[in-house]
Image (cartoon, rainbow, N blue to C red):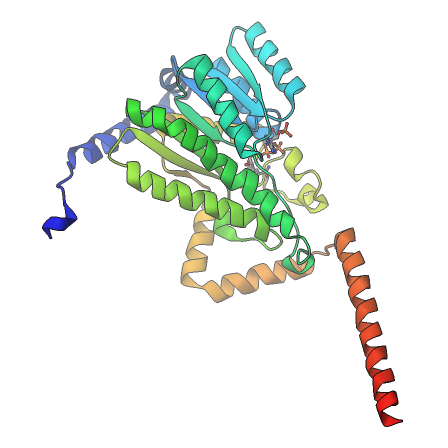
Amino acid sequence: MKDLKLRSPKIFPYFQHYLASIIWNAKSIFSFNEALRQRLKGKTVLITGASSGIGELASYRLAEAGAKVLMVARSAEKLNAMAADIIAKGGKAHAYPGDLSDLEDCDRICREALADHGQIDILINNAGRSIRRSVKFSLDRFHDYQRTMQINYFAAIRMAMNILPGMLARNEGHIINVSTLGVQTCPARFSAYLGSKWALEGWSWVTANELAHTNINVSTINYPLVSTPMIAPSKVYKYMPWKLSPKTAVRWMLDIVITRNKRKVDAVGVMGLFLYYLLPKTAENFINFTYQIIHETPPESYQATKTEAARQTTQVQNNVKQGATVNAD
Ligand SMILES: NC(=O)c1ccc[n+]([C@@H]2O[C@H](COP(=O)([O-])OP(=O)(O)OC[C@H]3O[C@@H](n4cnc5c(N)ncnc54)[C@H](OP(=O)(O)O)[C@@H]3O)[C@@H](O)[C@H]2O)c1
């Protein structure tokens, strides 16, 4: 066994972390705003997807609570206006416009932010893209899978890989990855989106396991539906009664900033997990039943592909018939 170079790790840090977790969880219940201010005092937070929805409101709340906020998204004008507004209100904010689907842009943003501010204490990977489409209508749309992976997974871990070295050197930091309740409930039509969020969660959980003895935490937020521009294109969500307001979604995020808990998920998510583990076939049938109730219009590209495929099939059939006739002659 000598060649394995085994070591005997200290177990004391685990107990320190349990104690800290109990204290910060209690603080978040009994004095939320004060706990948030304590956590964010002198801290620099980089948040992606800051120009809209959850990220926009969170940027304001983080700055109000005392953090220096570095905001990332493609909409430069919007980010600059937000930064000016936050500064006018007495906060600290900076805009870092860029396209996270381009990995070199992820590197550039991190390089510039680190050069300007020295360190990033909290990274919130919040930028995201959702696609709602059945697998049967995605067969000619492989790019749907590539686009969701690019922003929801590769961009998030590329940002973390740029920022983690500083956290490791200081033995201090927090990475918050924004995911979805869909990971626990697996609703139909989200194969591309959920594949990328599952990948992000896989990375988060393994990284958290590796860093559990340090003061670097990795947290995941499994949001249910939130009323933001992301869900506006899907008519069906207008009628869903159980949506979070952006304000509540931001409260969840700030709660994670305070507690540094591993996961934030609601009771539906926990039930989903149990159902899939205990009665997987029943869970599948239930989701399939709801899937069949709701009509889905195929994308235009699908219609075109289908028509072309039908035309080619007819042509092949005709050729076969003609061939058969010729042979008969
Ligand atoms: N809304 C929901 O129901 C819901 C539910 C579960 C989880 N979530 C998750 O919550 C997070 C925030 O979503 P939201 O609802 O607030 O969505 P949103 O309002 O559509 O905001 C998405 C943000 O991501 C940014 N973004 C998208 N593509 C980008 C790119 N290539 N480069 C840089 N930034 C990019 C957008 O900014 P630009 O367009 O300016 O680039 C925008 O700021 C996402 O990770 C989402 O998956 C949302």
